[in-house]
Amino acid sequence: MLNATFDDCDLTKFCRLDELGLEATGQRLDLGQAVLACRVVEPDDWCHRCGSQGTPRGTAIRRLAHEPLGWRPTTLHITVRRYRCADCAHVWRQDTTAAAEPKAKISRRALRWALEALVLQHLTIARVAESLAVRWNTANDAVLAEGKRVLIDDPTRFANVTAIGVDEHVWRHTRRGDKYVTVIIDLTPLRAGVGPARLLDMVEGRSKQVFKTWLAERDQSWRDNVEVVAMDGFTGFKTATEEELPEATTVMDPFHVVRLAGDALERCRRRVQQQVHGHRGRKDDPLYKARRTLLTGADLLTEKQYSRIQDVFDTDDHVEVETTWAFYQHMVAAYREPDRTKGKTMMQTLITKLGRAVPTKLTELIVLGRTLKKRAADILAYFDRPGTSNGPTEAICECGD
Image 1 (tube, rainbow, N blue to C red):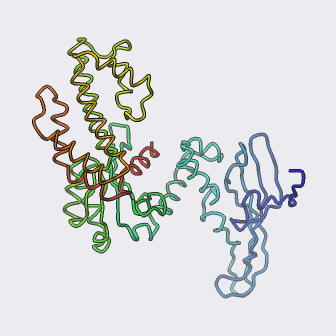
Image 2: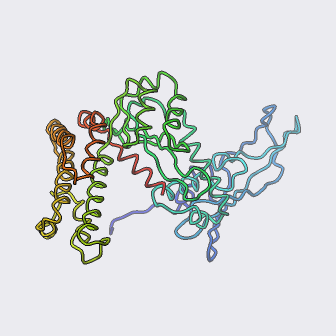
Image 3: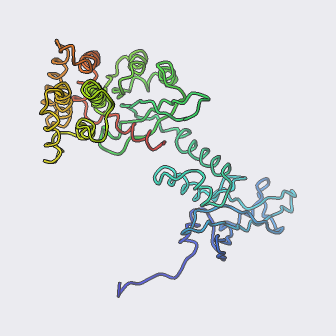
C-alpha cells in the first residue's frame, strides 16, 4: 500500500446516491444517526402538460430511509425544487422516482439492502426496521412490495422452464390458518449448469389440488415445455403432475429417499431400545449414544466412530438395527457412486431385495420396501437426469425459516 493512490472523497459515490439520481450536498453525523443532504441531479424544469419551461417556485424536503452506513441508520434529506409553468399555470416537483416510489419512505438502495439482509443474512424484519430507523410495518410493507415486484411480477420468470421442483414448507406456526405453503422452483439453470435454481412461486396450502390448480393456471405451451418435476414422497404432488403434465418425468430426489431410509433406521433403533432396555434412550445407552453416528455415511466415519458402531453391533440384541443400518448405507452408497449407471443398478438391486420376503421382525424395512417399490420409477429416474435434485427447494424453504 506504500504506492497506493486515492481519488478525492466523493460522498455521492460512496453512499451510492448516483444510482438514485441524487447528489450529496452535505452530511450530519449524530450519535445514533447519519443524515445526508441531497439534491436531484436532473432539473426537470419543463412543463409536463404543454412542454414550456417552468420557473422555480421554492423547494420541499423529501425524507427517505437509506441503507445504513456502518451501524448508523442513514436518512436522506432530498431538496426537491418546485416549478410553475407561466403558460398553463401547471405546478410540479422534480421527479424523484429514481430514488424511491411515490409516497415511499425507503429509498431503492435501502430496499435492496433490506432484501439482502433478509435472504442472505437472515435478519428479521424487526432488525431491518431498526437498522433503517423506520417502523416495523413500514419496513415489512416495503419489503413485501419489493419482493412481489422483483419475483412475482417479473414477466420473464416463467420463460424457458424445463425442470421444476415442488415441496411443502411450514410457513405459519400458529393454530389459525393453513400453516403449510407449497413451494415451486425452477431447476432449469441448475440442470443446465448455468446458474442456481430460482424461486417461481409459493402457494398457500399443501395438497394435490393446490399444486394441480397452480399447474392448470399456466398456459399449455409452458406445461408442454416442462420435462422433469422433482418432488418428495407426497403422492399428491405426483398425481397432480401426472394429470396436468402427462409427458413430464417425475423424479423423487435423493434427499427425501435417503430420509425415508434414515427414518426407518431411527424407528428401528427406538423399537429395539425399548425391547432390550424397557425404556427410551438414555445418555449411557449404547444405541442412544450412537444415534447420530448411525446416520453418517460409512465413507465419512472416523476410525473412532466406526469402532463405536461395531461395539453396538457386537451384541445379538442389536442385529435388527445392524440389518437396517446396512440397507441405509447401501442406499447412501448408490447415490454417492460417481458412475450413475452403476449407481442406478445398485439402487435397483436394493429396491428388489426390500421388495422380497423380509423377515417379519424387520417391520421398518418392510414399510420402507413397500414405499420404494411403489415409487421405484421416480427414484431410478434421478440417475438418468442429472441436476434434478429437490435439494435447492429444501434450501429455499430453510431460508424461509
